[in-house]
Picture: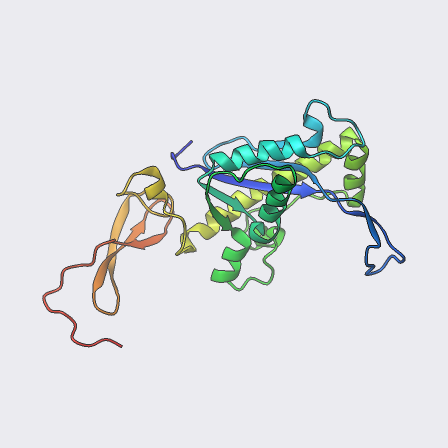
Length: 256
């Protein structure tokens, strides 16, 4: 680990709803036969080399063709409990809410509080990319691409307990986390609202964005009534300013 702050990169894959319908196109479900569940999730801590993955099939008592994610969700909650910051792509709308829904369904208490970064929202806020999908951002930023899933047959194979389908799903899931981390690192210097890593590390002289340094003076930043020393980090290229304002010889008489 490169810092004491715990940044967790993660991604999940879920099963489809199994329903009765009267038609095949834009159909309203008449009855849900089986609700969606989490099939697997992959993760890596910032500074760690290994990408980990867990699926329903990795737990004792797993039966091929039987969908039960309770043990998987318990393991995921433990990771959330250890994290200071959690990073996911489209996490605010999908991954995080899916995880929390399954935790509630299984009667688990919420994990300890953490900060959350959604790289899709970061890309939308600071850039006008043609597409904010993870795969497209990976290509635009010259990082890499997602793997091919093999289509819906992979999901059907996992639901049926096919080991080859599980292996393919997990490889796909792990590559998403590798791509996610690289996209995050590319976007990180642009984030003016990044969680204060120097505070989490209790290293107040380090960069608030990456927790490293060194920091170099880069002129001043003006507010309405005062100025602040501006800094740039040599490690991540992120910008920040001094917490305290510079001393000025005269007070500003007027502001708008």
